[in-house]
View 1 (tube, rainbow, N blue to C red):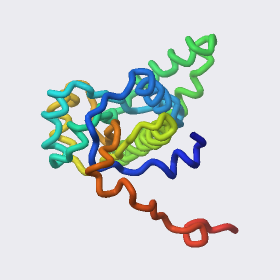
View 2: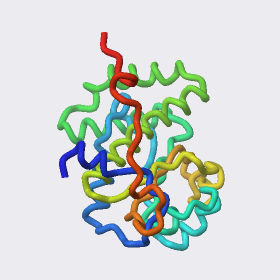
View 3: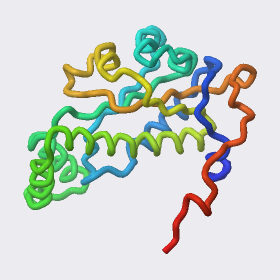
Length: 209
């Protein structure tokens, strides 16, 4: 399926049919999220993949009992780091040095630039900044799912603290920011399955200067 056709095909599915996603498709979607752009390349979040049915049942109340959480194949939670310190930046520099085959000392200026930029942020600003990076990964995941002909529903309507509790995220220094469910549409019971996709037309949306 061509990209634009895939994007026209996808929608925020409300009812899923319980069919499991093939492991290869799930892996491809997750790899796309890994390759998403991120400020400095730092990716200040973790991607939590919840396939276990009992855990998804525990999560469902935190998502206001939306059925996709249990009727889908997986819930993907993008959980931001609650703090970004020189330690995390140092670990990232080590990854760059290893993967690019360079001495870590050659990255000192880059590390200093990142650390200096982050120190200028208030805790609230840092939280918003990290969430923006997670949303970029979410977007890539949604597009990748469409390309794999897997249904994906982005989910902001949930109780983050409750999700943190179920998944034990606080102990990991993480906080749920946004999520998506993956699965396959229940065409017989989803009222949106045949609805025309409505977006603002180009003339209203796109401003050319």
